[in-house]
Structures are given as structure tokens and as C-alpha cells.
Length: 437
Image (cartoon, rainbow, N blue to C red; front, side):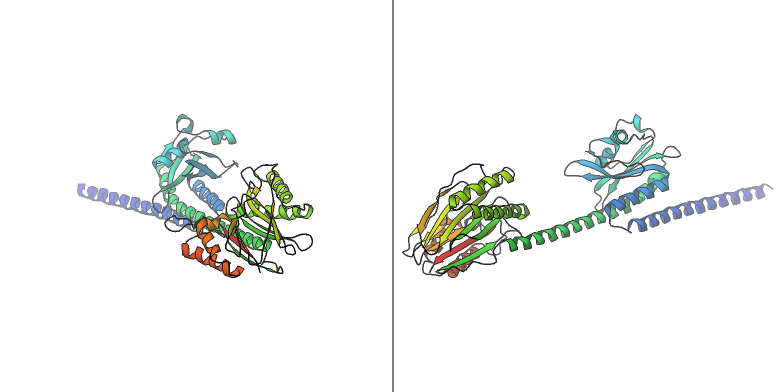
């Protein structure tokens, strides 16, 4: 009798343990299945906003939480920012990572259970104040990327049944692994799209800029013109143009605006439009420079300016009248071998609203050459940090007095390339050679 009772108790205990193991396995299976299903859903989109919404929906539905929020870490600014919240809409809010339970979790990597949020001094009340919502219970865990680095915090609030449980935490931690990977993929995808969009816009700006600049030099009887222009980015701030004025006179403009890339290209196109407009109403070089400078000062932000050499070539009189607004002095090489720098003019355009410029007229004899250039030519540096410099340019020009414009121009570009072979340009390079033949 006693033996039978002992066997029965042992049998009942074994059956009980078997049922518990079966229940545990079923629970684990359901847990894993829910994570697998969540992973499938998260992998269904690369849209960051949609993904954040999906993550919070999965988490709140599984844990019976009222709301969920993803706080992403901006390391550069030392801030957390919320992009998704379930329930009433709240605007994106940024706050220092030193604030709130979400900030604490992001700093320490600890998970936090809170039964009464307002009794915890770490709780950040700003979200509640903005939305009129009242947070009670709270569960917050860190989000980590593939490298184990914390990329933010995942927070659930107000569980329907009261306080959050260890099972809620276990599910949220399992979900966060998949969520963090999906978020990283979405971020990389978004960055890739942004790069593609930016590259498309830059390429478009480059094509537009090339159409704004002359396709080539005009044909002027008795003169040759060689042009070389190479921006350091796809678009640049160097500018050259030809203005067709009264009679047979031709305006030659070459300059450089502040900065590089798209902002410089926009300022350059602004300068081009102003110069073309002003040159239709003003007849002298100095007046064109003065009015262009005044208008550029009025329509651009402080600190934006342009250097410019503006010359008007009169082929019949064999003269060029010029004004140099802060541009590197062009080099005039006489057929006799004499060298002169053209310095008359004034300060860069757009620095002040009301400035005066002087102009000078010089005669161009047959065989004379004029080399006009931006600072990118003489400031080009080699691997040792040495600049190409004015002296090298002057030597090339002196030794090219017998050459035509193309030969001189090619000689300059070859020397620039040889001075720093294979280097990435740090500034736009533009120069023009005018030869009286």
C-alpha cells in the first residue's frame, strides 16, 4: 500500500514536470515564433519612418503597452531624439542624453523597470507636458547595433495590466536586436538615397554651369585666345566670360568668387548675370565694376565677394582697357621679353556697397601676350606643401613669348600637372591666354 502510494506520487511528479517542460517549450516556441514574425515584418521596409512605426506597433501589441517610442542617439550633438510615438501625435523632440530615463539607458546600457514614472527622479516630463499625456509604468532598454554600440533607447509606457514584467523585458530585448539591425539598414539606405539625390543635383548643377560659361573663345581678328578651367569639385566658383559691346569691342572677364562647390557656383552665376546686365548700360570698365560691386553687395550675404579682372579689348585700336578688382595681377608679356603686372583697379566686388575703381588703357603690340588667372594657379600645392607660386608662372610666360596662345596655355597646364601629379585639386584653376598675332 505504501509502495503503491509512493509510486503514484513519483508518477504524478514526473507527469507534472513533463507538463511544465511542455508548457515551457510551448511558451519558448511562441516567443521565438513571435520574434521570427516580427523580424519578417521589420525586413519588409527600408523606410525609416515606417520602420519606427512598425517597431512600436509590434512591441506595444505584444506587451499590451499603451505607447512606445524609439529614441535615437545623436552622438555628435549628445542628444536623443524621438521619431515615432504610438497614440496621439507629438512633434519630434530633442533632448540632451543626460536627461530622462531614456537618456540614462542610452548612457549606461542598463534596462529600467519603473512602476510609477513620476516618483523616479530620472523621468523626463517634457513629452507628457507637450502632449498632455500621463506616464505611469515604464520599461526602457538600450538599442545596440551589430558592433554592440548603443544607438538609442526603446521605451514602452503604461502597460494595461499594471507593471511591466520580466517576460515583457525579454521580448523587448529580443525584438530590439532585430529592430536595431533593421534601423541601421534603413539609415544606410536613406543615406545612400541622399547621396544619390545630392550627386544628381550636383551633376545637374555642373551641366547648368557649363552651359552658362562660354563653350569656347570668340574669334577676334588679329588675336588668339586659349582658355583652361578645371573646378576642384563638379561645380566651381571660377568665372570667365566674353561680353560683346559696342562696335567691335569685346569684354573679357575672369574672376573667382568665395568658396567652392555648389554655393560658389550659385554666387558665380549671380555675378555673371549682374555683369551681363550692367555692361549693357554702362560704357566704361570702371563704371561696370562699380555698379556690379554695388549690386553684388546688396543681393548677397556679408562675406560673399568676388575678385574679377575686367578688360575691354578694342581690336581696331589695338588696346585693352582694364580694371582689376582684387584679382591676381595678370601678366603682360611684351614681344621684347619685358614683363608687366596689371594691378590698377580696386578691392574685390561686393565687399562694400559704394566703391570706386580706376581703369587703365594699354596698347597691345603684335607678339604681346596677356595671361589672366585665378589664385588656384599659383596656390596649387605639391605633396611637400610647396605652392606653384608666381615665380614659376612668370618663368613660363617669359620663356613663351614666341609661342602662340595655345602653346603657352598648354605649357602652363603641363607644368601645373607635373608640379603635383595625381593630386586632388583643393581650389578651382582657371586661366586665359590672349595673344596679339
